[in-house]
Length: 101
Image (cartoon, rainbow, N blue to C red):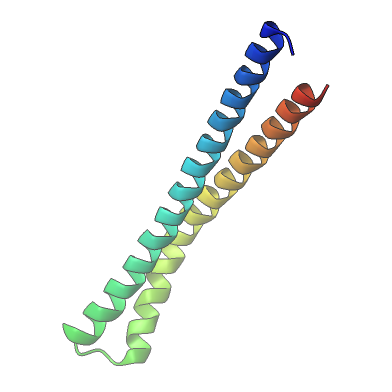
């Protein structure tokens, strides 16, 4: 392989690494959002049972209310995450096509 070809393939590898790194960061952000929601649910249940001596049925009602408040934002974030992942996949496919030409 010529020196220019080697430089080009190194460039492609670096671009692929960057795309994969971006996808990983977006994935980790999605996981953190899921964790955040889990903490909200946990705290509602813990507070509802411990502090107010609420019946479990009342506590689940509070959890449901909080989830309904959070759900539109979560759905929007999931859609955005899905779009980003699809874009990352398209970018990877395009990059692979260029490399394999």
